[in-house]
Amino acid sequence: MPAQIPPEAQSIGRARGRLSASSLTTFLRCEKQWFLNYRIGLRGPLSPHQVMGIEVEDAFCSILMHRAPAVNSFEELESWLHSLIKEHAEKALLSGKETFENSLWHEGDFDEYFNTENVSQMLENGIALQLEEVKNCFNAKGGIHEFTIPAPCWDSPPHFTQPEKANSMISWKDEPHQFSQEITWQDAWEIARPWVKDPRNPEPQRMYHPKRWAAGECDLVLRWDGKTRIVDIKMGDGDGKFASSLDAQLNFYAWLWNETHEEKCYGLEGWYLTNGLRKIVEVNPQETEEYRDVYDRMKSWNCDSTLPLESPCDGEAGGCHWCPLVEIPYEIPQITMPCEPLSAIPSRVNVKGRLQGAWGPLPNHYGEMVLGAMIQAGDKMVTLEESQPGAFPSMHDSPQDEVIITGALPGVWRRQARLYLDENSAILADSDATLTRMGMLRTKANVEGTVLSCSKRDGKRSDGRPWSMMSFHLWDGERVAEVVAFGSAINGTILSIRPGMNVKLTSAELGWREGLVQLRIDSRTTRIEIKSKA
Image 1 (cartoon, rainbow, N blue to C red):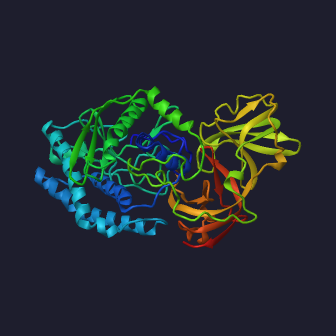
Image 2 (tube, rainbow, N blue to C red):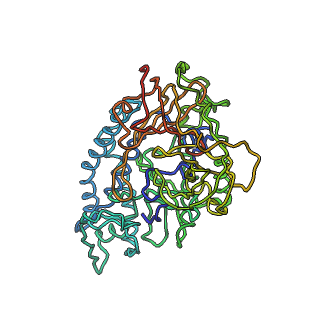
Image 3 (cartoon, one colour):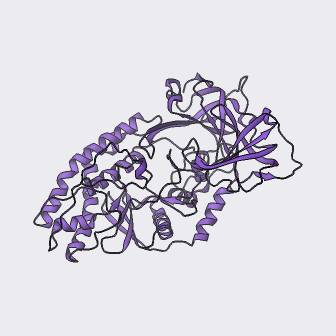
């Protein structure tokens, strides 16, 4: 894709703090669902449709990355494409079923919804939509096919935004297409092939707003006729509760494209693979100030992790799982010593010391680029760090002198105390705020509660190295908090955790995401006890 260099150096997943098409459309449908999903990270069980929506899209794009053989007619081109369907459908079905069955929390009967026949039909419908582009290209006697970043192809090397981080030990096939003097169907296919996300590239293939507060990843971009058209691939048929979000989603992409590219977005389309519907969407993005206003409303949302919500939603928006509940479907857990309620964890502290040693931007444990510094009081020195990218951009503006830091989030990383700063923090020359001695900072917590959800994610960093992250949400009867484990900290006990279990954590590390507490598992010091099973 024509993407920008990611601000995350290594990229362990997407930053929750940016405005994205999915967070925007969720916020517009149901603000409470957005809060639970994107601020707290609490979601429902994985469904077969969620899995196959990704797999079918990937299979379709993989077909589009094939270069056509020599053909003499449109019918031969169509027949060749249809010959690819079964292999890609079976691969998508196998991968999807494996992902679904191996997920920690899923719901539904996979075989009831998906089989080789209906997945093949979806791919055939997608091919028919792309062949309409090929016909138009052929009738126009060609189009634009020379681009700085060409459409990805299995016969050409992938494009890396950070080639210095790519695995240099991999050799890629490189056989350029030879165009004929007169347009052929093979040429038309090659010219009309769109930009898609290249599965060979582990980098985030997204657009990033110049000021980094918004990001988005297009499914497919057509440009053969000189007019950029952004297409979103949907597995559905254009009906249903989520269909109304298409306009807002695609126009967000159009706005972001216009902000990050010289050429402007000309057209927007939704391609529905269940019935082959091509839905044309009017290009009418909001102004930057309007998107920024939504982003600011998100950032100013009250970080109250009480569950169930004080004012549940009506559950009519689609995708609402936890937000309409008036009662959690589990008994309130009994908290035993030495554990304490989540509400007892100190969320903000004020400290005094000498500011020094500014550094960054450098990657944090999520691979996100953040600013940092040090603060010293006596012989105690503590690292300061932005809680997430852009959370405290004035970190280096304060003089390196005696200061008081208010509203800092206490935590720990690699067994060393750390203070995280965000929009609610300040570095002041003087303040009458009550101070906490830096030697007395809380870095650990003992908690107990019922597991509401769990998930595990695996992927590759920008340099190709693998990463793993396991997370679950613990409810103490009043509030909910996310618990995470990375890499070697993911052991058999953690992987056995499921919703409904009562879990006790002692010496969990304090961390923060989006101003909310996030407990981290330290493989050496954190003890996990599963007290009861669902």
